[in-house]
Image (tube, rainbow, N blue to C red; front, side):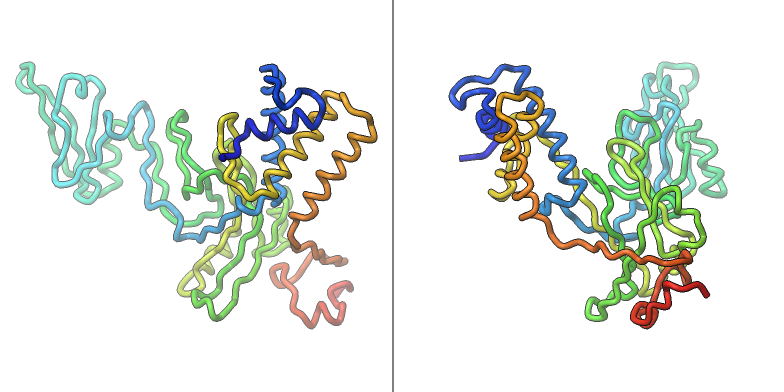
Length: 340
C-alpha cells in the first residue's frame, strides 16, 4: 500500500489529538498541516537531514554550451529560429508581422521575411555577414545576451523560469536547495584521491583577500536558481587534468497533498513525529508534558538520522596564509595560533 502525504497528515492530526483517525479532517486544518509539513521538509533538506535528497555534480562538465539569450518578445520556435541546412517554417503574414528572424550561426547568415512585389506572398530573405558578432546585430534585437560556456566568477545554477523573459542559467541543476560542499578535483584519476575541499565563506566575507583564493560562497537569487561565486584566480587553475570542481548539494523536497512518499520508513516516522509536534504546539489540545514527550521523540529520530559532518574550526590570531590553507606540520605544532 502506498504511503502518501495524506497519511502523514491524518496520523499527525490523530496523535496531536486534533482529529480522530476515522474522522474526516476539516479542510482548513488539512491546509495548515500541509503548510507546516512543507516547512518541515524544507528545513530538514537544508540541514542535510534527508540523505536521499543529496546529489553530486561536476563542473565545468555540467555547464550549458554557449547560449544566446532571447529577449524583446522573441521566443524560440515561435518567431525566432536557429537554422540548419536552410530549414525554416513557411513564411507567412503572421511571422512577417512579428518581425520573425532566423539565424544560421555557423554561416553567419540571418534570415528575415519580406513581402514579394506587394503581393499577398511572403518569403525568407538570407543575408550573410562577415562575422558572428555582425550577424547578431542584424537580428532585430532578438539576442540580448551571449553567455559563454563554463564556470565564471559568478555562475548561475538551477533552472530557467519560463515566465521571466531573457532568463538563463549557466548550468541546469534541477531542484537545487542549497550547496553543502565544493571540492577541487586536482586529478581526474580517481586512484590519486587528490580532492581538496574549498572553504565556504559568507557572502559578505568573499571579497576579503585574507581568506585566499580557495573559497566559495553562494546565495539564492530566486526560487529556482542560486548564484555561486568563485575566485577568478582559482578558475584560471582549472586547466589540463586539474580542471574539475565537484559540488555536493541538497534537493528541494516538493510535497503535495496527494503525493506518494517513496522514502525509507524511518523518514516516514520522522515526518509524522515532526508534524505531530508542530500541530501540538500550534493547536494545543495536549498537556505540556505530553507535548514535551512528542518533542523528545522527534529529536530522538532526528539524532538517529544525523551523520557525522565536518565541524572542525581553525582558531587563529591572523586570518590565514597561503590562500587560506594550512599544512599538517602547522596544525601539529600549533604554529597557526601565533602571529608571524
